[in-house]
Every structure is written in C-alpha cells, then in structure tokens.
Length: 234
Image (cartoon, rainbow, N blue to C red; front, side, top):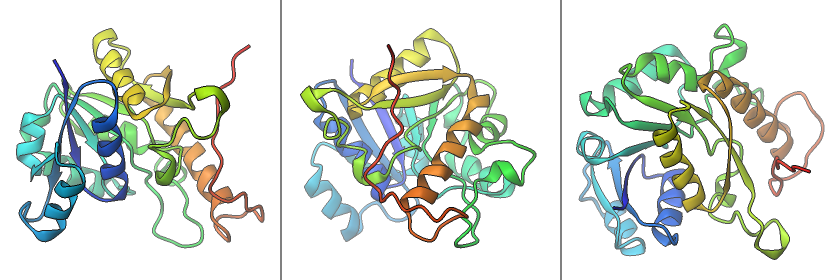
C-alpha cells in the first residue's frame, strides 16, 4: 500500500517535497491541499509537471491523507499557529503531521526563530499542543534550503545520503512512516527524540539561515546556501 501524503501548501517547499516523493523508488500518493481554487491555471501548470499528483482543498486533502506535511509560511505567534490548525479541520485527528516550517520573526534582518520570544516553545511543540491529542506531530525538513531538498545525494560521493534530523513521537509505527517519507525524499532519517527537540531543530535552522543569507542576523559570516549540517558516526 502506498503512503498517502497530503501536502498543505503548493509553494516552493511543498512542490519540491511532493515531486521528490513521486520520483522515489517507494510508493507515495500525493495530494496538495490549497486554500484557493484548485482549478486555477497555476495549479494546472503544477499538474502538468507532476501528472501523478492531485490538488484539492485543504480539508479534502487532510481528510484523505495518512501523512499531513505542513509546507505553509512559518507561524511565529500562537495565534498564527492556531489559525493554521483551524484551517486543517477535524480530519487531522489521529493523523501524522510533519511540520517543515520555520517560525521566523517578521523583522528583517533579524529573522529570529520564535523560541527566543515564546518561553522557549518551538512551533513544532506549539502545533502539537494545538492539534488534537490523537495527532502524531513531527518536525523535519526545516534545516536545509529548499533548493537542496530533492538533491540529497548531490553533496556526498558514492551515492551517500545526507542525514535529516527529525523529532516527534517515538511510536514505532508512526515513526517508521515518517522515516519512509524522509527516505523517500532522499535523506537518511536521524531521529533525535520527542517533539521537545523541535526547538533545537528550529534553532539550527535559524543558524543555517543566518550563515546562508548575507546580512541576516548578527554574524558577519556568509557561507552561501550550499552547505548542510551532517551527522557523521564513527
């Protein structure tokens, strides 16, 4: 049985992840859930590029999916997170939710993640608190640039894969599904612990952004966007 993945948001991040899953050796079915009219020309062009994908309303995609990927703009405040959750509808209960967002402050060039202003609570944790308790929430895919999400084998020689850190429920079945999704995109899954560690992953993403974008944050370093935080085990 293929994994049914509903991707909420059909922007750059969402369509890159969806395209990678459709091209993988594993079996995935993809529905994009969008807030606007799914029949517009924009989405028709997407379906020409990804003819095996489907596009529907957010509610229909959530109701259909086994795994829900949140590929929406980062929600910095609690009210913004609540708005995203309400938009998913009641069908999200008992589903796997993968939060790939980075909750950055609206102030530029600071671009700080929300943990510094919200009592250390990450967006991943806030989503877990706001969603039904039966939901299995994970944080993943937020520590790498979008342009590299479908090119995990391009960095290392001999077909080695980049690692993708992820946090969330340690339920063996649900965690296994998330690992399937991460591997399907092309990464080596690396589980770090419960959703509490989303705050660390979001802090890592802030560091990646500050190093990768010129003039952002307090550092004067500019590494460019072609780097990745890799796990190396001896």
